[in-house]
Image 1 (cartoon, rainbow, N blue to C red):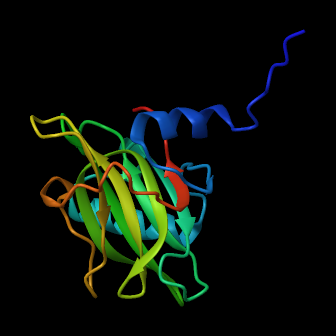
Image 2: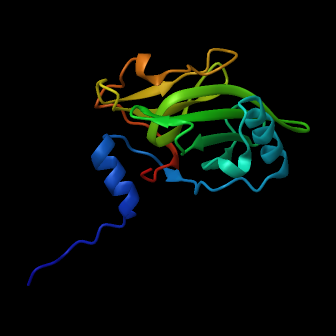
Amino acid sequence: MQHRTRLKIKPLFFALTLLTGLSFSGWIQAQTATNGALIQALETFLKKEGLTLQETKYRSVEIDLNGDKKKDALVLFQDMNWCGSGGCTMLVFQGIEKGFRPVSQITLVREPVIVSETQTKGWRDIVVRVSGGGGETKNVALKFNGSTYPSNPSSEKALSPQTKIGGVVVFAEPR
């Protein structure tokens, strides 16, 4: 009689762990923004770029990045205005008393995107995968420098393949 052990790991977690070599504690479902203050912040940002929210494909997630008990936001664009062979642009917004303030604009972002449990200068590190565009495939931790996150993940040092990342997956769907 054979005994089969059923894995109680969600298929997405299992696949991401195999593909990236990273481990994590959970995920948040990204979606189009429904928070009026985040929508306003996005509209303001896009207007400066000569674009509108209606013509922009994106996903967003709200999560506290700096431990102030206010939701901050990550926005990952997904259309030809913001994506190329190396990845897409992601925005980081800080949740403030009355809305959201832009903190970072990060290019060349590929999924999965993981908000790490580790922090640098009071903000959680953001782990992204770098590949495409002719560069080496690697996972990197974007670390807050006191005012912003690095704008180009491809210039960051690769995480060791043995690195165990505790955190939350915020973007994990193929584009």
